[in-house]
Length: 326
Image (cartoon, rainbow, N blue to C red; front, side):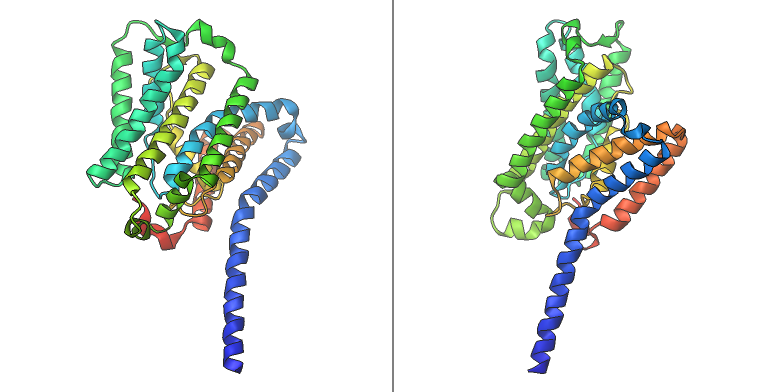
C-alpha cells in the first residue's frame, strides 16, 4: 500500500512539476517584456515609454508583426524558413515595376509573388525531400539575385506610386496589423490548419500514421505565410517609398529572433502561439529602440541581440524534438 501511495505521490509530483514548468514557459515572454520595459524606463528616465517613443515602437513592430503571423504557421510544423528577405525584395520589386502602370496592382502583386516564393520552398521540401531551411536558402538567394539583376538593368529607380503615399500613416499600419493578428489567431486556435500544424511539429510520424494529408497542410501553412509576408512587403514598400537591393536584408534573422524571444520553440509543436509572436515583436522593437536611446552603437546592438538570441534558445529550445526540424 505504501509503495502505491509513494508511486502516486511521485506521479503527482512529476505532473505538478511539468505543469509548473509549462506555466513558467508561458509567462516568461510577458515577464521578459515587463523587465525590459521597466529597466530601460528607469535608465532613460521615462523617455523609453514616452508617447512619442511608444508610437515609434508600434510603427516599427507592425511590419514584423504582420510577417511573423504567417511564420508561426510554418514554424509550428518545425519548418525553418529563411527566404523572407528574398521574398520581400522580389515582391516589392515586381509590385513597384507593375505599379508604374496601375498603383492598385501593388498590393496584389506583393501578395502573389510572396505566396509563390513560399510555395516554392514548400514544394522543394515536399517533392525533393529537402529540409525547408535548405530550400528556403535556395529561394532567398534566387529571389535576391533576380531582384538585384532586374534593378541593376533598369535606368529608373523603383519608387512607390504617388497614389499610395497617403497610406503612410501610423493608423494604417496598426489597423492592418490588428486585422492580420485577429485572423491569424482565429486560424491558429479554432481551425484544423492551426491544430494540425502544431501536431506535425509535436510528432510528425504520429500525424502521418493517422492518415492526415500532411503535404496539404504544409502547402497551406506556407501559402498563408506568403500571404502575410506579401502584406508586410506592401507595408514596407509604403514606409520606405522605394525598393533597393538591400530591401528586406536581415528580415529573416530578425523574424526568427522575434519568435525565439517570444518563447516559441524552433522545433514547433504545441507551444507555438500567435500571442507569443506578438509579445516577441514588442520586446524586439522596444529593446532595439531602447538600446539606441541609451547610446549603444549598431555594432554593440548586434552583439547584444546575439547574446539574447543565445540565451533565449538555451532556455526555450525543445531538445527532445530536434529530429523534427525538417
